[in-house]
Image (tube, rainbow, N blue to C red):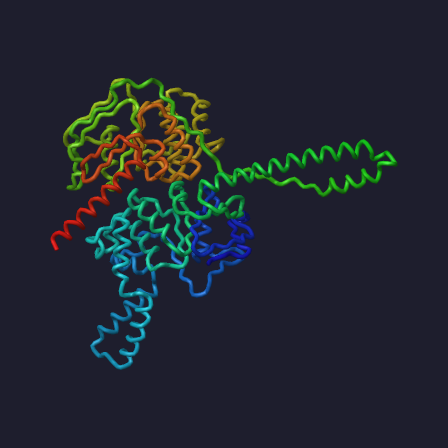
Length: 545
């Protein structure tokens, strides 16, 4: 169990949290939610001891081990992948190294033997003999293959490091597990594996995530940060949405009844206060009136952008034909003889473990990259808007947000452009920010403004939910569902894929697998195929024996 007592954290004069008293108990997975800037990551850092609170304290039960997902991707560059994961239980790792150092001594003494025996006993109590196997299992579950386990961390690409640091946090069955955006940069297979791990995890988990499906799948409670307070709700994210809205509705109804009562009391007092026979009743009602207090209903600090993609023209029957596309990058064939035809009602989610393959296809279809072989043809009635995964080049100029968006607007009018920015929460002077200093979330909102203002009838989106808060993801999700044109997109957000796509294209080992199905149906069929494959292998092995 972990709890806080009168926890306060100030940044300057502003209190990010104030007098927070909350208890997180064993066997529960808590989803920590709140608007951007509410202090979710800061709260996790305080719980983990990385930040000191201004006032109050964090209370951790005696002899309990806390583990958290680290964000420094370079901290373990001089260690192997497997050692990095085992360091998730630092005491166990230290024992391993101390034992090895003793056994390597040329002048091994009786004292060394006694010390080694003590270490061996503690090592056994900590299930140390299973450490490497357990670490390898975690890595493989997250998609880090065995041939990478003895490589140095400095030789691992960024997305792989994220998985390794996540495995480090999960290692050794910690009593308290703190995860800040654990699904970021994970492919859908790895996210699915993590969901199952957390569902079966028996200790305490506190996680920050913008993935609504993930929170619904793993959470038993929601901790909502709003206006410096943290309120606990039983149930998953969807239950929080319903219960929090119900609570506000009930408070409004209670206030309405109180206001009616106040009105009646005031009318009685005004009517009979000068009447001698009624003066006692009027006095009694004055006292009753003074006791009535309306509940303070503060609107949530959350802000929802308004996203609405409206094509300027209707799309024709001929949309896109892709014929035998191939592309090799750094010696690896990421696209291998890919062909497909899109119809006017297609909303296609591209899935698969190789993110580079999906990004490469989108770059080719948007004209940013040439294929090695093959070709593609857009229909004459189509117009495309492209959301790149890496938008760094888009935001290197000294332009303000207004100036940046104006260059893409068909209507060169400040009021017109400001309207699109206002929908994306760039109000007033926000539009005068330089684009080269924008945060990741602000860049995404700029790109979505650009796509809206384009009037395109085909949208190509490469991981558009990265860097967005939950409110913006919900708004984008609804906009994609309503969009009357054609979609080609990839996303790590399960709910976006399931509610939007009517066609799934998987790129695996450069080849395309095309399914006219929803995402959940695709996953169910894939799981069934894997089980049958495992069963067939087992039967074959039994036959061989």
